[in-house]
Image 1 (cartoon, helix red, strand yellow):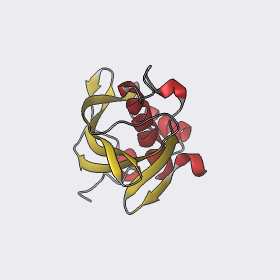
Image 2: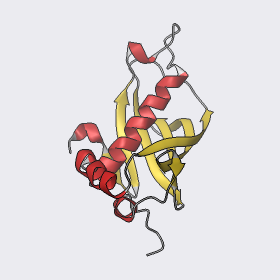
Image 3: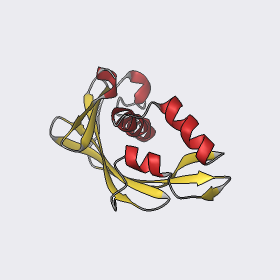
Length: 148
């Protein structure tokens, strides 16, 4: 872990990103698809800080569920305010709901105390092209095994 991974604070993952020229459109405002990349990094680093050594974790799950993958099933976005080049943004991620084969996460992209983008992301666990229950080791790691 290092500062690039962000921090866990009060049940939420917080990761800072700086907006670069490549993240913006011709007017200097963050291009909408750039927020998707920022949020993907937030979800990945959230797992990392929960203790997921991605290679080891994926090798373990691959043995239990061959051909598995996480896929974004749905994403609902609300763009509230623009960000601009050189802004420093915080990507905040936290779990909302867990079902057998999916987990729903809430995410916000903030500048200071101001929410710029809100998202609800549903990620499904699939194997061999079909939804499958998330393996228990992975649910425990993600603190998603709420029933036990």
